[in-house]
Every structure is written in structure tokens, then in C-alpha cells.
Length: 271
Image 1 (cartoon, rainbow, N blue to C red):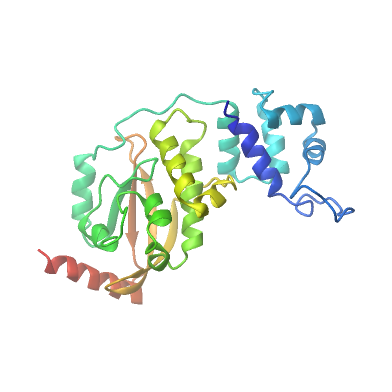
Image 2 (spheres, one colour):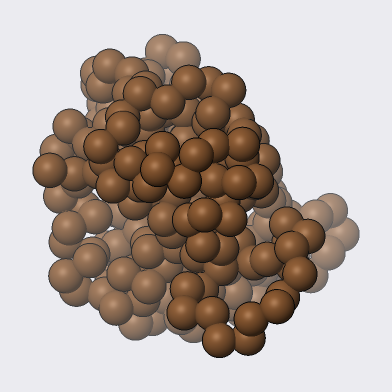
């Protein structure tokens, strides 16, 4: 039986050092990376037996107060804290047409032809991209799914100038998207597929990082226009639950803006 709550607590406990929580290092021969169970329990104001049952899956209904105390000890971000609550108290699985492109969104993407515009769903499939976004990812395998692209296409290590950073974000996004929704078969199948085929995915997945990117820059090396840095904003599409609209632009007057202009010219030349 799956124990996602216990798996998450164990992974984050291993990544939290005694220095981070202000404990003295009196034993240099610690067998456990990070904190021990008894240390987490004491810092969170719990009995060792209760915390052990949480990790082992024998206690599945901790209170919000307990979860918040654990989040504080493990120094979780607000997103990771929300994820912890979802694991303890799963919500109903989201349902919706996460692969259908809203025509209004598609028209918006074409109107914003000078920007990189695409949509994603919880699995990081790309149901829609405008022509500039298609040109940005052109020539790459698996460009219909941004997680497979990172982990299964060797060319992605040249394409993303900060590959490790991007890989960690993709995995953290999948964690955040999944929440406690292990009934989402497609998402579960994607995780299983990448766990079998990518050692890097397994390494990063085991960290149990949780994060949703809403605005950030990504550095690329495009095979035709060279290096380009794009600033992205991500918006939820209320009319298509589960889908996000992603819009990327270059800093005005920058070398990246000139590179993006060259990419637009290439797109126009194919008309």
C-alpha cells in the first residue's frame, strides 16, 4: 500500500540538517542523513511513537496543528506545506478537459505572435503552442511534454544552459501537480515511465521537492539563434481546469531580444 505522507516526511527529514534546526553536532558517526526520527518528534512537540507511526503509515489523520509543526521543523516552503496537508487529507481528484485547447486561448496566442506562448497541463504536456514557441522547441524530441524532453532527450542538456536547475523544477512541478492525487493514472504512469528510464529523474524525484513556477527566467542555447534568456509568467486558465498559460518574453534591448527577433524572422520566412 502506498504511503505518500510517510515517504515525503522521511525524504524531507533526510534533507534537513541538525545545523538548520539549531541542534549541536555531538556525534560525527550519525548513521542517518539529516535528522533522526526522535529529533523531529521532539522539535515538533510529538511523541516519538506517534511520529514513527506517521512515517510508517500507521497513523494517517494528523491534525493541521501537527502538520504545521512538522512543516516548521522541516523548514518547508508554503507550497511544500500545502502539499503536506494534501497528502494527509487528500482532496477529490480534479477532473476536466486538460488536453482540449480553449479556442480563445489559441487566438490569444496567435495575437501575441511576438511572444513565446504555450499551455501546459499537470503532466506538463503542451496541448497548445504558438508558432514562436514551436520554433523555440523545434528539433527536440518529446517537445510535446516538457518533462520527457528534459530527461529523455540528450540534446536537452545543450538546449537548457541550466539543465540541473530545469530538471529539478520539472520534477518539483510534477510533485506539486500530483499532490495527493495518486488516482491520476496519466500522472502516475509518467512518473513510473521516467523512474524506469532515467537515473537522473529517480535521483531528483527521491528528494520530494515541491514547487510551482509562476515567474522565472530560463536560459536556452537555440541551434539557430544562439543563447537566449526568456522571462516567463504562468497563469491558470479558469475555463480549462488543470491547464496553465505560459508567456515568455525577452528583456527589452537585450541580446536575447535580438535573438528572439531572429527567431521570429525565421518563423516568418517559413510562411
